[in-house]
Length: 509
Ligand code: FAD
Ligand code: DLZ
Image 1: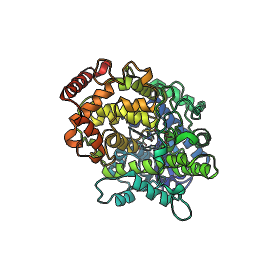
Image 2 (image 1 turned 180 degrees about the vertical axis):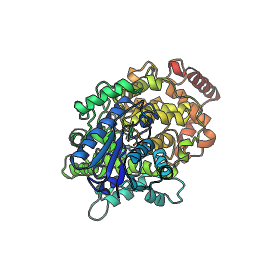
Image 3 (image 1 turned 90 degrees about the vertical axis):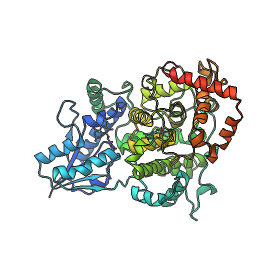
Image 4 (image 1 turned 135 degrees about the vertical axis):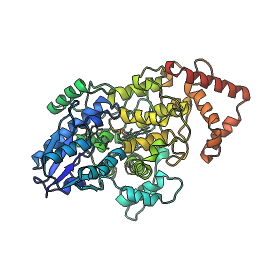
């Protein structure tokens, strides 16, 4: 009996469940660079290079360790376009008795493999992806009949389950579960920032760069590709971050400086999401740094919360609610995504910098994603599907299981508050408070309705007024709506007029 296991581009882990389940040297491992995967959204070119190069390095390591690896290189004009094509072609050439895989990260691929068994007539067995702390099944059990799901409570469960930052009595270290209140400082140029570790492309990566630049039509700039593409490099990036960025991660987690692309963020998401780093190993390194007295507790807790809290929580929501989740549109957004999200040609400084970071680095930190590009799309009233497709394409770490709940749920409030207790809507004042974009902007953040007024301002008030019927009763928005009530009718009229003008002229801001 011969088994075939297919390893997808975000399953590059040596202890992947399906790899552990096959017989080394006897069973087959299949990996394939596929046109359909490279084109289902216009991915950032750096993301494609990262995935293909990491896949090629991983395949080489598997071969060196005795696995029987079949690798299909990218062929944009060839007949093999999808996972189904690759598996079918392999099964025609070889006698395969069973297909084994680890649960794919995205619903559409999960669905594709579920239908493959029927068309191929060979059993397909799917194993749970145990690289996550929780499973879709136990998340569903936790969610039960709760109307609203809150990350904080799920996170506490994950802390108990992993024992991370727990004391000997089963209590959270420092006597608190969450130190978020300490993590909202504005960064004023000190301490000096720490860039993420950068890696020069080796021969394999250079080959992939040539391939991708010659035949893939994607987004962003390929020049300056500097991601690590092996487990060893990803581990070095982790060690570098723990030493240089983590000590300040908590304090400046929400800061929005004008001239820093990474600040104290780790840029580890792309490694975590491809399997080059294991989330437990990352959290253990962070906890160790705290126990050794090298980083403060608010930094270690803040970082671990992102991984065993947010990362696990959004994945739970994804599997709980897909496939219908992707079509939700609670606030009825019906406008097109402005073209400048792709081109970066926009006069508002905060948006221009966030999109420039995105185009150049296939990266933007969380506050840029949430409070700049995300906030603008929310206030403008863009169709959530278009916003989601943009986020899925442009970041090196973007996979639907993590992108969709963050975009549709957290940014667009498309699920009506399942994930977030209120929309993260904010005026220009928030952006001014958290950084120094506004000082470099051609728009005046202190003005609401004039010709030069920051567009975030009128859009923010207009958003509240337009959505009062659905959001007005939200207890967490009471203060915002009290401020709306205080506006004179003439001011409300001026806001609506300015917001309408912005919507009509959005491509020229
Ligand atoms: P750090 O700030 O150093 O954070 C540490 C780690 O925590 C990250 O590497 C990531 O693994 C995890 N993390 C932090 N916040 C979240 C979160 N909200 N959800 C899940 N994991 C989190 N993250 C992705 O990995 N892929 C995506 O496609 C993605 N899309 C997003 C879309 C939107 C609209 C928003 C608001 C957020 C999105 N995020 C996504 C979450 C977050 O912005 C990124 O994980 C983070 O910016 C990655 O950079 P970093 O590694 O420097 O993160
Ligand atoms: C994102 C991506 C890209 C661009 N290309 C491939 C590929 O050619 N082969 C592959 O196995 N995986 C690729 N991926 C990652 C998958 O799209 C991703 O793993 C699925 O969407 C499931 O999460």
